[in-house]
Image (cartoon, rainbow, N blue to C red; front, side, top):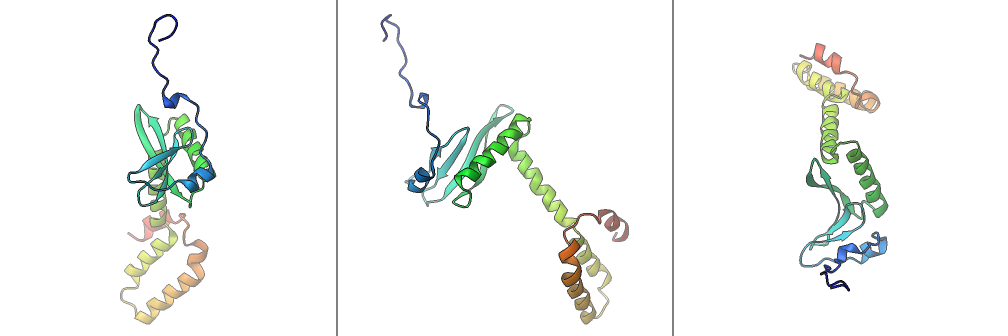
Length: 168
């Protein structure tokens, strides 16, 4: 109670300002019986598992729902890198974009790009058009493409129109 006789709730631990996480604190963190968190700031924390794994996570809200985004594994992703990734995710959130969905869309578009690459289409063409050729001829064509063509234009995505017209 204060001087006026009113009940004042006790201050919680979380009311005190926290210090940001440090590299020393991360390296000193040891596994416990149950997973636990070391909080940084702005939703970033390090999740430490009983097996000793240390995982960067970002807790955020989008459309009224609490969500979590994996940012990498310590020490592969340093504290500075995790903070950069957190800041990038927060920029997406500021623009109304869910960073989890944005990541999934990026993975899908990369997968689609690899499917539509020149190398993938050339290999599909070889299966269709070299089926009745001698094995030595097939191997010669494959070797020449792998040595001379794929390193230069193998991952390009600029042959989609050609693929749609000639290979179907």
